[in-house]
Image 1 (cartoon, helix red, strand yellow):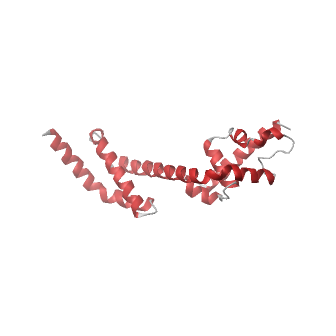
Image 2: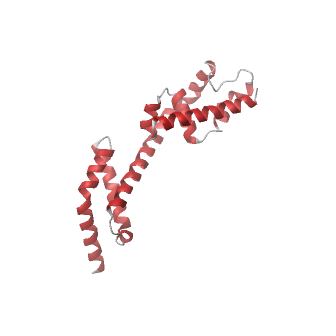
Image 3: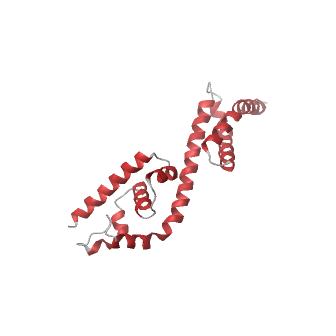
Length: 173
């Protein structure tokens, strides 16, 4: 009997909020398939957490937060898959950068041909931004849509990362 009351509560709350949640999923996603995936994931998380949510006055704010967080997770996962495919060609591209005497190249120090060692001082996000900008040729706006940060944030992080690289290179002069 208790289980039946619980399932009635879950059903009534979901029916009350599901249309608003689906519309939000459609707004956040670029395709109908992605919106459906997001909606299904939110529904699953709602069912999994229903016993904790019964104590709340309103479940809708929680659902909004789950939509947002799940969407961010989907974008992050998509960008990681995208980056893995783009980074397969990096060794050749980094050699080209050295020939062009970019920020990674120091003609006075032959030990810095190991670009992975130089780039290891960067956080994974900084490294991704630097590589996608200088190797992949992405603009700040393009990176913004891939990574999920604002274009201004991308430019600030890139500037900070390049400063870190220059500082490390200056130690070897």
